[in-house]
Length: 447
Ligand SMILES: Cc1cc2nc3c(=O)[nH]c(=O)nc-3n(C[C@H](O)[C@H](O)[C@H](O)COP(=O)(O)OP(=O)(O)OC[C@H]3O[C@@H](n4cnc5c(N)ncnc54)[C@H](O)[C@@H]3O)c2cc1C
Image (cartoon, rainbow, N blue to C red; front, side, top):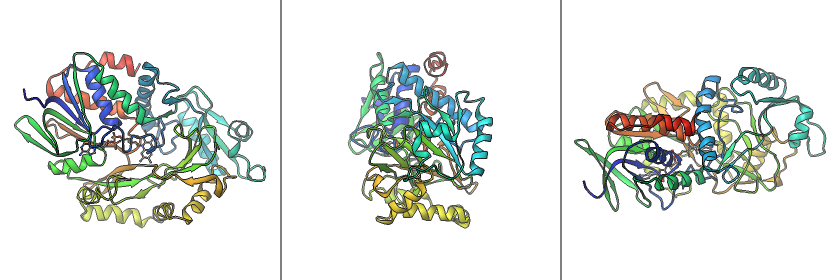
């Protein structure tokens, strides 16, 4: 076999590619696996600790999830916890913070009480925190600048301790790759600074081209974030989908304000999670508020304008895309939301506007308490379903059944990395006639 031939080649060294690389090495009899990454390190884009909210989204406090969605993410969220515990990563890059979702005002309070009833069976540890309890455990939610109690009714639903809630997904990415490369009797090769420019198929073999090298592989999985769809389109796959990159920015406080994660009630019409406050594990636990949601005409942030053309190609603008945009913009709530999120990026006025919104969580928050977090925040590659003329909110995968898979992973893609990898490992094994050790996998990551 040629020197650069692998049974499976994974494109993209973010957390999705790393999780798949790890599972293939640990739980299958696939002998040779390559991980090919464009940048000179792993997790340089959305999986980096500064790009996302560092949250294990299991559905307990995410008010944009239904009970069914929470059931499915809970399984994969548990895998993150089990993986980290297996290697002793708790209190290294996985932490248990207090967390809650709050309802403010009578309507939201009633909503949160009802949500508690609907979700308590799935998450038996959830508690209802009344105003006096909140004043003890998360006092900044209750008092204004003068130390007076906020006038509105408020309730929190969450957990004080004992639940892992926070992960530096960047460090987890590195650990997955490191642990995969330690597995004996496997060829596990990592190629950094290797941007894949083209994938072709000759017979049963995929030819994967980078600027410096050409690889061949029996199976290819593309976990390249927004570029997954770009590469899919180049091969004539996934043409019913377009990609709308939604950047998310953050505002960082200049001191520790919240003791734990505080989420808010989701506006039912809005496609992205409501603003929340999280202790940043890479910034002394100072509170990070966000993320905002801004449509961006490029596939990567903080890398100049090199991906603008890629964006235009991946959007595949046509009447279906125009209809999706038209429908979104025709709703005044969504229109205002888009406008406001745009203003959150405009210097001088952005902070003033953002503070007004964040005061719903912390009434005493002042202009001097927060700064726009420069260099933080990534891009969610939201998928446009052109057939059904809809903006898809979750993840999407294109698997034509020909030995190649393309994954697009907006939030909560980091939480679901091990679950998504499990799905792909099964497809790989079925296609190549290999074996997936489900029993061992379940023992380590599910039971
Ligand atoms: C603001 C924000 C907040 C978020 N918060 C959370 C959260 O709290 N919890 C959660 O679970 N999820 C969250 N997410 C989502 C999460 O960050 C992503 O789903 C996850 O990081 C996706 O990982 P990935 O490996 O699929 O993609 P990425 O991390 O984007 O990695 C893709 C990799 O592919 C590489 N690549 C691209 N093109 C090529 C090419 N041609 N050749 C070789 N390599 C290539 C890139 O360099 C990159 O390393 C958030 C996202 C954002 C933007």
